[in-house]
Every structure is written in structure tokens, then in C-alpha cells.
Amino acid sequence: MNMNLNPKAIAIVAGIGVCGMVALQACDLRSFVKVDAPKAVLETVDIPEGTLTLDEAEAVREDWVFWVESNTKRFDAAVDKSEQTYAVIHQIVSIGLDTAGQASNSIPYGGILFGALTGLTGLMLPTPKFSRKKE
Image 1 (cartoon, helix red, strand yellow):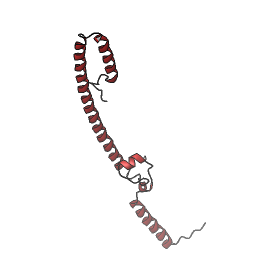
Image 2 (spheres, rainbow, N blue to C red; image 1 turned 60 degrees about the horizontal axis):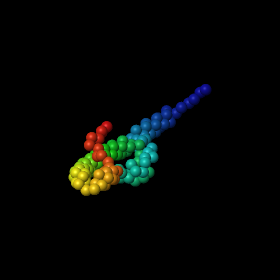
Image 3 (cartoon, rainbow, N blue to C red; image 1 turned 90 degrees about the vertical axis):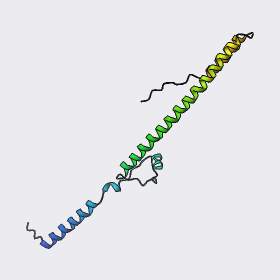
Image 4 (cartoon, helix red, strand yellow; image 1 turned 90 degrees about the horizontal axis):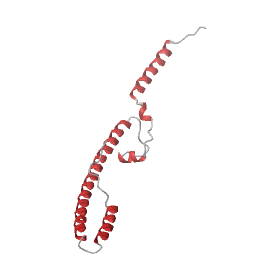
């Protein structure tokens, strides 16, 4: 097995190999891998569908987490404000029912009418949540 390798050919192949390695080192192979993210995530962070690659995925995830957390805080604040409003309305109705209960004692069959009114109000106005557990 007598192989006569030309030193010029070896140098050329080695040079091509080195140039190829240098070129590939500049490439990020993650930019060729597509991420099949949900459409809602892509719309939320303003990325056209089908263009998300693996090298962009971490930045998009950070944007998504920020969007979810900020909107969750805004939603919780809106719910808390609405619960406070409902508690005030419930208090006003309760005061009105107490007054109606005292006034119903002076009319005939007032107790029955007051009981029916209280029952209907209890169905329509459940007790507000004064202390809500947050995890």
C-alpha cells in the first residue's frame, strides 16, 4: 500500500477545511431551527407566524412572561376594585333590608313580605369576598 500524497493537495484540502471551519464558526445553527410556538404567543409579542427561530426564543419568552405578569397584575387590580364596589353595594342593600325589616313590623303580614324580600335578595346578592387568598 504505497500512497503517494501530493503535499500541495494536502495543503489545499487543509486550507479548505480551515476556511470551512472559520465560516461555520460564524454561523449560529440555532438560527436555522424553527420554533413552532403557539399563535397567541407570536401575536402578543408581534412576531409574524412561522419566523421564530431557536436563537430568538429566549428573548420572546422573556417578552411573553413580562406580558403575562403585567396583565395578570392589572386584571387582579381590576377584580379587587370590582369586589370593593360590590361590597359597598352589598352594604347599602343590607342597610336598606334592615330598615325595611323594622318597618315591616308595623304592617299586616309584613313579616312574610319581608322574608320573601330577604330570600330574593339573598339569591341575587351573595356575600362578598372580603378576604381573598392569593398564592
